[in-house]
Length: 208
Image (cartoon, rainbow, N blue to C red; front, side):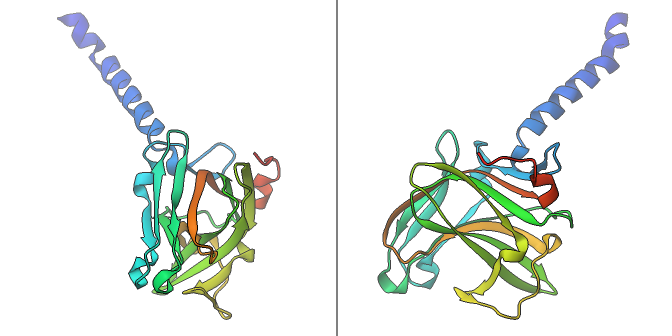
């Protein structure tokens, strides 16, 4: 029995290390990678479960949309209907606080030829403000697009807000995507990564 007692601390350390490795491998969806970039990895099988879908049925519309995992990436898909004054579908998730030096966000995806919005929501002084940046996709082609935070536009129910505060990283509490291109029919956007970074850190990155 003495050898077992002698090796017990080492065994505990090994079990702890293995447990940490398993935990780390399952929580890559919102973590700091070596280059200093904060990444949401949408190729992880469980990442889609922390996102929430909000469609125009909250206003009487009948559009449908959801985020699911297709085995390789997270797929934002559904159908847009303009009936009952509808016409949008969106997904969003909360994020941890971002470093103040973050000044851009990059998205890697495979699109369907439609136009989407990347949306960032802030809570400041008890007020929620949503900022958008539109982008177009090429059907079936993998793309990466990066957007400076100072190029986002503040919106409320689709209308621009002219006197909104400047968008800063430390105020961002939520990231999302929305389709509202006034075109009825099916849509599908395969999401690979969303990365928050500084322009300096991103200077060495090449588009996928």
